[in-house]
Image (tube, one colour):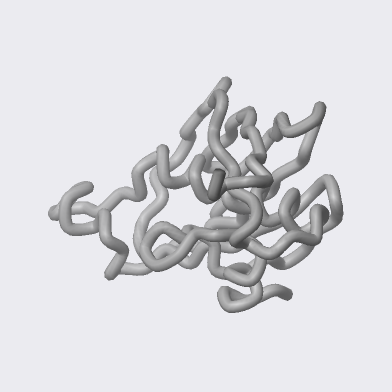
Length: 146
């Protein structure tokens, strides 16, 4: 199990924009991230005040950060030497609301890669029930300061 401190040694996301709390398993091609959805999340006050619902775009971002951890960990580069950027989000589906108190289990698999481009399929679960899925691509920039 990799905790938040260990995650931050690999990926550059910080503060409210780090959307994964743990990595429970990983290889060079698969990873499982964990996100504990809290009542004090930055989006709760506005999405929606009467019934906070985690925005779907943040669920996809959490899947992408899990993928980012997997790729950057395999590359063995410090978090300051690589950044990942979305290129596409395909087939995103949301099948259940994610609420404060839920624990998201984020399953990601790399299905293709060529040079700096990587394509992933991701599925998010709460209590074993799929709540979201997406196929997405990212480009990994190994010289972010240039």
